[in-house]
Image (cartoon, rainbow over all chains, first blue to last red; front, side, top):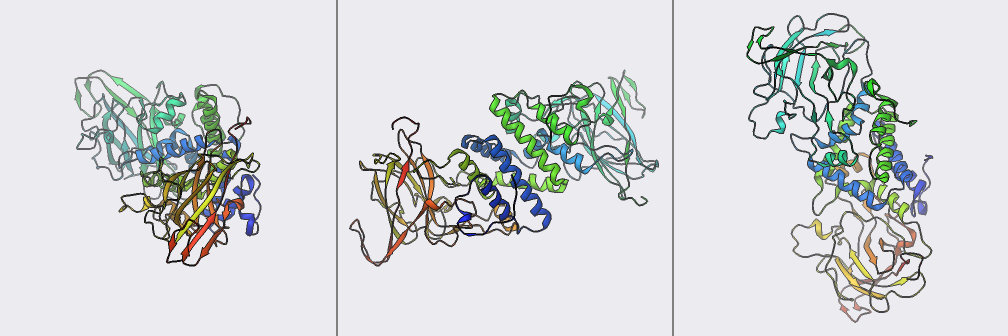
Length: 303
Length: 303
């Protein structure tokens, strides 16, 4: 659609269809403030109308889309964000992450936020068991938070959340009275952190809502490769929201939300029953996984 | 964005951003059935990613959009459809109407459906008072339903709905126990219909929800010119969903939903107290308005 300056008023604003209608809607956003919001709305209008005209959208299709988006909104609750999941499966979330977090030399890459984060999680001491009863195989996770200039970042904050062995986050289990597989750690003076959890497993994104209907209609797999979510931050550094995936996971190349990055794949090593690195004695097999995070200074100045 | 055939699998499906990510999402819809749904989803993916990249959408803006659309969905109820209203103020509803209802020689033009239709309204006899107590100045409406071949259409069905003098539809008044300004008429053997109602007045679309916030931020008027909604149908004919507007209305050129067509403007004539054309005696001023509807045959065959 070619966008031209506003037309004069009068009957030019009646009987609008096609390009002329798209132009009038575009013009009607001309007084939007601030300028950035105007830019967003006018670009949205151009693309929305171009899409409808390109596909010659029928009224039945339009109404199906209205009903779908309404259901997506109504499926959202305090513990479920279906609209984010829709953005995720359309790849929009990863597109926005790519726009805003281009790879910075040596720093940990970002990936999707997902719909299951809860702000201000419970703080655990280093070495604690964040599983807090979640079902799954024990897994001891260690790592260090460092700066891109090489030094450790003392006191870095790590928010950690993950699904259990059955692929469910704590917020998807309404019977729970306490968080499971979720918590906050503070890295030590050497930037190091450690915690127990359960080994993450691949799981399907929730398919009992409208996004599940879409994925089914598109004949797309709802599976995500196993992962642990991290949000790592420290004063003077750019925070990173990311996952750590697992080597050899069968779903790394078909992630339903397009979130996999090669640099984010960690190694989960299996061990026979015995004494773990922190001295804990286990009478069942357990896993260890070590993965470091590297943050870039918040600006080009010294961090 | 240039769209190419699917890439090979493997690590080509990791570390995706920009064009490569948009391409992968596009490809991931390749197995969508039927083909028309695939076409829609793939075009949507192209435009959605092109929009995000063109404006370099920030994460804050993305999240504001997620929250906005969630609120739009959650504002919908049995009697309010905020998602349709969003489509209306973005001009999308009229764009879809233009695509699907190009002007057919001599037939009544279509305009927006709006969010306030209720299916299967109460049937009134011709000449009845559809106002049913709605506040406003009495108005006697008459007209004929005809075919584009010139003849009257006996038994044509007219669903009629409108706001009262205060700009509110009955469904916006939770205290009402019966419909007001809403009903169904059946045209007589001569295709003619008549009813009493209240004179429609300009009104703002509801501004107490997220669409109202958008309109305010865009510095756009929420006003719609006065109108009566009609859905006119008859066996063997293409139905039409439309409005009749009022000559001289100050909002004809700034309709918040871009719905005005010159051919849909009727003349509301004011009369001093006295005897109306149907013999009704009024001790207050009243209005008359005559507007005919013309339907095209459902196919090119004889109707």
